Each structure stands twice: as C-alpha cells, then as structure tokens.
Length: 264
Image 1 (cartoon, rainbow, N blue to C red):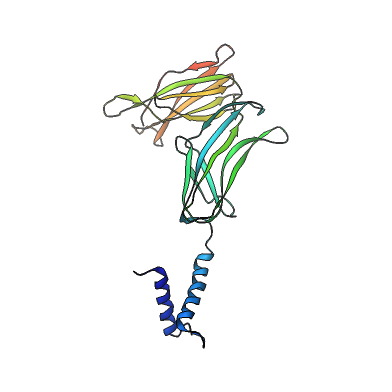
Image 2: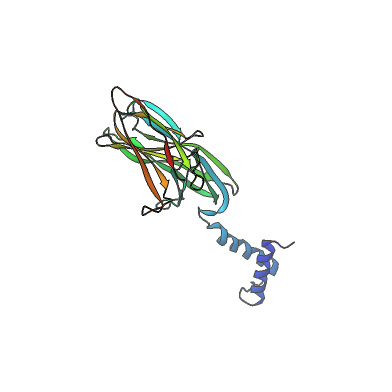
C-alpha cells in the first residue's frame, strides 16, 4: 500500500535521476534518499507552530463569581452562556481566535496542533488602590500529543456588581407569527441595565420554564429589555427592544415583572 514516506522517496529518486540532487561518491542512492527524506521532513514539519491544523482539543467552562462592591463577600456564582473566550497561539501578539460559550458555559477549541496556548476571558478585579478594573484571567496550556484532549476545568472570572439583596424576575413567552400561538421562550437572553445613578449592566438566559432572575441588586432604578424579531420591518435592524422599567427601594427588595412576549 502506498505511504507518504514511499511517495517522498519516489520524488527524491526522480530528483536525483534528473541531476537536481546529485548523490555524493561513496554513498548508495538508497541511503542518500533516506538522509534527504529526514532532512526534508524535518524542514516541513519540525517548524510547525501553534495554531489550527492538528487534531488536539482544549475545552472547559466559563464561570462567573459575583461579589459585593469591595470584593469582601461572594454573593452568587454561575456558568456563563453566550460570552467570549479567547485563545492565544504560542507567543503571538493578540488573540488567535475566540468562541462563544454554550448555554451551560462550556467552550472548546478544536483542531489544534502541538504547542503552547493561552486561554482567557475578562474579569473585574480589585486593584492595589482599591478600585476595580477589567483584567484578563489566563490559563496556560501545553499540548504535547497530536490527538490530545485537555480539560482545563473552570475558567473563573469575577464582577463586583452584586452589592445588594434585591431581585427582579419575570417570564418570557415567544409568539408564533403565523398562528398567533404563545409558547415558553427557552434559553432566551434578557438584559438589565441601571438607570440614572444605578451603574449596572448584565444579562441572563431564561430557564426551561421561560423564567429569568437578576439577583444581588442594589436599591435603584433598572431597565429590563429583550430583543424581539422585527416581523413587520418597522425598525432599521432585524430586531427591536422590548423595554420594562422598574425600581427596587427600601420597602421592596423583590419585584416580579409582567410577562414579556417576543417574536423569535
């Protein structure tokens, strides 16, 4: 059966017969072909750098820990879906690629060659001056085998937005344009942002019952919104926001919003 090695030997033999690679005196043509084969394959494959083109896999899960504003107390933790995780190939400047996490926070980079890689995402970290800033959290990985599968476990990032004990919850339903029927919107992204002096921005996805909850919130004014498909072509883009404004105050630390209906 033909092999790559036999193919290389045949090419080298043809080159020598054509006078392009002259065999030195005192060395057999077969031995000389073997020597050239080793040299050529070393040049072709020995200089291969990190990146795509191999069969190795690196995978893990992105987890977020939410703390109080001074990072003294962890309030919640969760696996993050629909967030970017980045990979650096070797010692290159800048990232080589990025992927979005699945609903359960899982991610993977496939078809990697041997070498060193850095996997990272961005986290809110406390600085030496007591302020918070966005910093990369990095896990370095060394792929040593061509078909290696490496589980890096949890890539843990932080934020310090969870500064209170308030909760805002609700439920999202999808609408069928043709029949007008409603159904539970599963794994649908819901956004929250602070209004006025309430500096906050976050997103979650609905569960199997279409429910969502934002927890660990301070008292203040908030805007909840989802993006609905623009079935009537009334807006410049393909989607438009459906907005619900609400507030948390000293007498109400938990708010349940009316159902939201969207076109998916």
